[in-house]
Length: 491
Image (cartoon, rainbow, N blue to C red; front, side, top):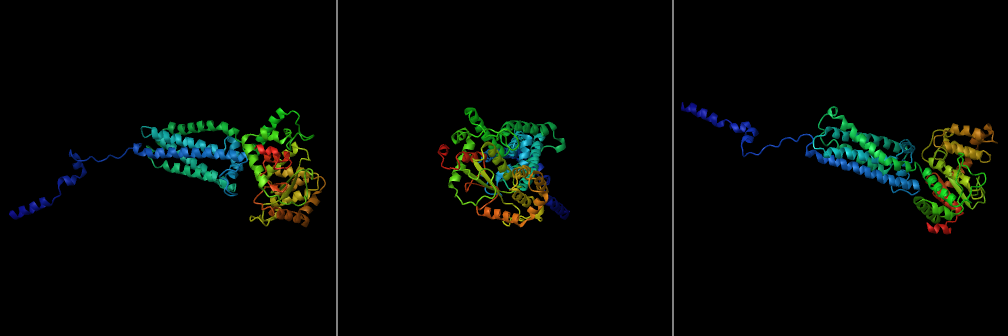
């Protein structure tokens, strides 16, 4: 008996304590025991830092959009933005790409403005969700959808940027901000499944924010020039209109009151002083910088001209090196033709030489097309050289640059047959293949390399390199090429 009891007692003594078996539940039932923390419900304050961080990131992207817009305005006015470091890292190239211009023309707002709109919508959706007292699943999913839409837009913009052949540093910063926002929106709980989120906050809040943001930037967007050409034209036209109103005696040269598109043009200003006085502030600054660069540039000797438009004895002699598929070269052609419609032939002359950006006909370019005969960059300059002695040279040049940069070698041949007056089609084809034409093109390339050409167009005025902006060229023509003209002292 004693022995059995002893074993029973041993079993009882080895049995775990009942309170230990019950674990925390038993401990929690004791008045003096600490209570276990309940799991945080969806939408609790613990989630709010993520929401506030997302809202701040949206505001950061909005701020970057404002900076980019200011830089865009400076670039369109003729100043170099700080984000344009070289040919490859150049925000101005991205902003003036065909894709960016198409977005601006279609919506009335440049890409920088759409960064502002997205940043505003992102900040509103995330900030509203942070202020909400409950889980607000509709607002939280709205913030996530805004992030997804931003990421998809960034992918499209990056592809368009790479297609333009340049990278925009501030755009990369915007992409980083959008990606950070999108990632942050998945750091908080949504509260419900996407399909259960209320549609009102889910779609209504971000759409309303986009509408409000778009309405805020549409006015400034419509006032922002789509391209440097448009910006310079606006600046020059504004100055010329004011001069025309104050000086009724100023008039265009006889027979030159329309540009190459048949549109009326303002008369040339009577004096350099009058023109500079009426220029808007950004244009005046761009002219001042351009004149100073012109003063500082070394005056290099130039070769006897091969073909000149205008008087060979003009006080201002413009020499340009171009590529027929270069968009900036097409811009330069339009600028020079506009000046030609405003000034008499004796005011300035233009000699166009060629620097094709194709290794098939330019050994200084690494990229090469497989067939020079099918390359517009190679056929275009040869066609121009063959047309230099023909009365239709100007018409052919206008047609080629009017269709640039989307023009083929076959189109150039067709244009030559249409516009050349004295050169027969068979004679023209023989000229394209002749050694004499090849030699002339090689001479142009060698000539350009002597000026350390870095890209097209390269423009020289009286042997000094200048930026080919319409206000600057007009000022130099009015100054008869003199960088020390007294009127420049007031800039």
